[in-house]
Length: 218
Image 1 (cartoon, helix red, strand yellow):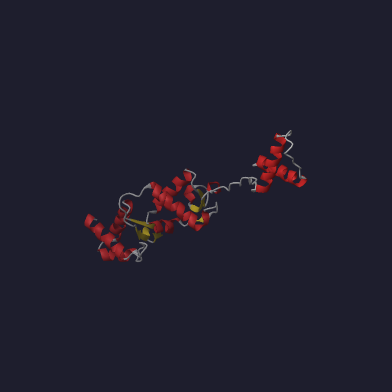
Image 2: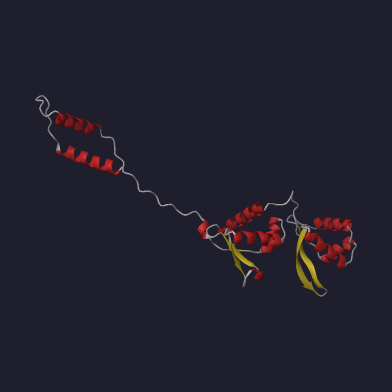
């Protein structure tokens, strides 16, 4: 099929796509509107997928495998950065309950459609995050070839609670006791002066001892 036919095919797919890019008509109707045979239409669907214009699932029918559940991918200005995809995926996991190490069930193909990227691009980015320890992946069977089942943000990545520091002792203002202390100390410093007398008060002495203890702890 010529380049012009590919443009026409993509235009037809866009006309039948919903807001998420999902094409709502069967393959035979698409190829009839295009005016091409089934073989050529399937071949060009594969070529459009290879250049990132569309995505689809392969289904097996009476006449062999054919593209199904076609999705027109959202156009983007320039190549998306890997880090941007990682942030989107991480945000999605956390939004679906995986922010505290809880597992979130994954349906990769609808998830890729929601991001407007291909199924392969989604898996590549998720495996990259897994390799860096940013997320954990749980597979359906033995290893990656068995398909994704669930993902989570590891529990250790959550912020750990910090133990509060012990409260420091506080000493209230005691102007009367301060005056008592000053008078006592002044009398003690002038023991030979007959005009200076001081009579200790037991309760005041106990209070000053407690204040000195608190100030030492602080």
